[in-house]
Length: 321
Image (cartoon, rainbow, N blue to C red; front, side):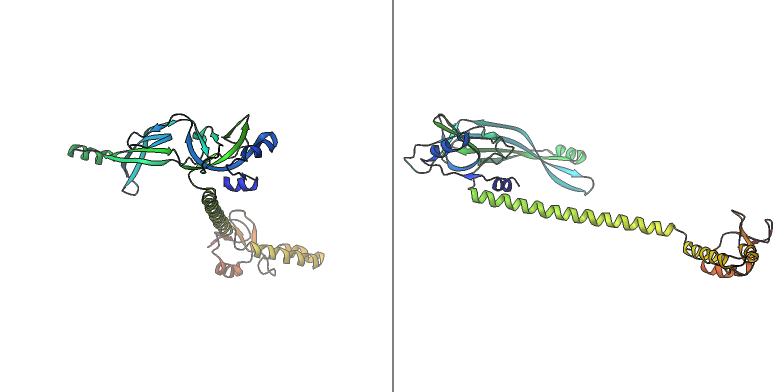
């Protein structure tokens, strides 16, 4: 994603040649805020010697001790690999980037190389020291759920003469040129790959993140739709099924009352809410309201189970189920 930002903000690819100082002297502030430059590594004074490989010299050396062990997963009931860095030391000496051509007297001093995101180190030595275990140790490891495998010893170096691609701020200071971390929040890179390969790798990473983002959004929308649909169905099940019927009965009753004569309105108010023609003869025990005629009860019972009902003109009559 950072390399897309490089292209959008106009990173300038500069050739490491005799005209480098002229280009920087004509730039505003004698500085290119974000530049891409490629060259060979050359030590300024002293070099670092490999501890394990003869005649191997470099400007950056990283020694790492990494512990490997197997950990029992109680959920999957499998042994999983687990690694942890128990010691790491990095040594550096000042170095420059110089042209591959001979006879070109120009160099770019690289500052703060350990701040770079992609430091192009090469593994020059790697050895695994397995753990020696007795029978008692094996039994104890199975009980504790952790089984050590061994220690891996690694040496990485940035060799003298290696090709390095630097992406950062390029500044002309008096007669020297230096490459340093940019000041505008952009990433600092020192990679062993060329610019085109590094750009292609970063663009592939961007596409992968875009695909993962789309998959995550689609999954989130699908889960949200499922939750809302389930909530809607549960709410529909909790609503009384005859609510529409009661509303239509009330509307029909209101129409009849508006059309009826004044002397007939009292009889309509006492009429059954189901047939709207006879007087009410059943009441609900919960509220004591006379609601419908007793002979329409079977019709209502066929549509839905009716709660406890009481027949008669007043409370105290026989119960109808």
